Length: 137
Ligand code: NI
Image 1 (cartoon, rainbow, N blue to C red):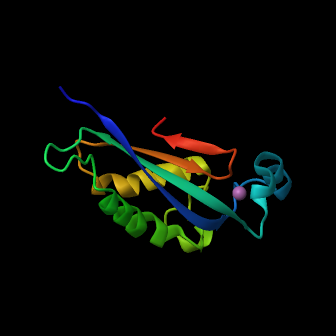
Image 2 (tube, protein in one colour):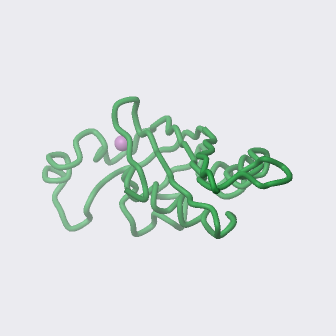
């Protein structure tokens, strides 16, 4: 009898971004992306929730050691994106709009190879207290 458990690790990073389509006028970018289209960039306090689902190990009782999970998130995500301009300072968003949706997908793809294949991974990313995304949906 296997009982899956969801384990969550919350992390936090600050980053600047600008959402825009290069082919569009400033006016159209502002219409679609609002303040996030500001040409001089702006910051968000991102809240990241990494979820790992699996069956607790028979010996340790852990689905995943949260210390190890914290280390993975620090190495792959926080050190890469914290206090960075996502458009200018990262390779991941050179040609990809750094929306919450795309950031969540990028974070998933960076963490997934570091997590045991038998475990499910889900990413929740809060761009503001009211706006957040889940990946996979
Ligand atoms: Ni924004």
